[in-house]
Length: 118
Image 1: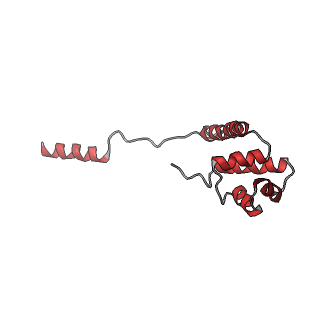
Image 2: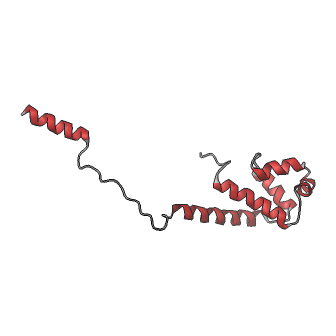
Image 3: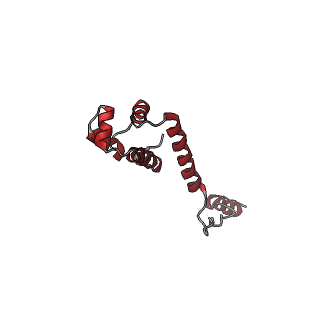
């Protein structure tokens, strides 16, 4: 499994959490009180220093009065958009492969050896 802590996908997830808190006009300390945690714990999650498990995410969203499934659907849509952008070739750039030799060097050596043996 690929490491995800510093991935673009995780950055989108963390930005979404932070923006949701900010949209509720809450400071990290305010959210910490609602969660029964410290402000530094909230900061560590939002900065990616600490991971949030699925139960923690559910509690986090409940404290922000935001639907768990709604959040997951929105996050999934954003991540899929990111994946689509990464799969498209860049405008104006086409991939050109170097011409491949008809025979490999090993094949050429075997041909040369068989010619000299005859």
